[in-house]
Length: 143
Image 1 (tube, rainbow, N blue to C red):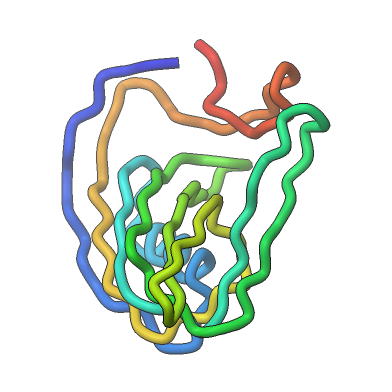
Image 2: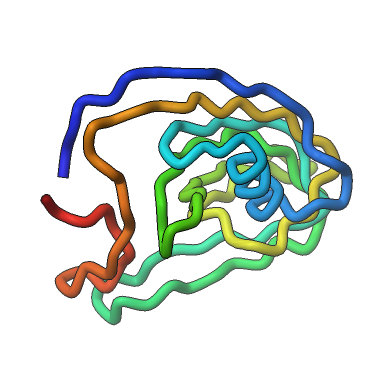
């Protein structure tokens, strides 16, 4: 699926300390009625959970990082899943020795401090996630 998109509003803010990073970003989308867009963030979390999709068995595997981490970059998008805004984000984190870890952002990353930017977009097509049988992932529906 592809479609022309046009930028609309840009929302910038700070997330509450202790909030779950993924859940708080999705809450910002609901609060501002954003159903399509791009998302970026920097900051720190007290711990994190990142995923990697194992393609051969079509299953997500997770790495739990049970220590404070810096958010070097978080990038993702906002679209609809089951009629609600869904944030699909990948994150690169670093530990106290500068080692980097990354993957698909999963729930379970309490915010220490986080500043975010959401660029709302509009399109004539609806970007709705649906199960893609070929990959086993919830991707933007074809069409």
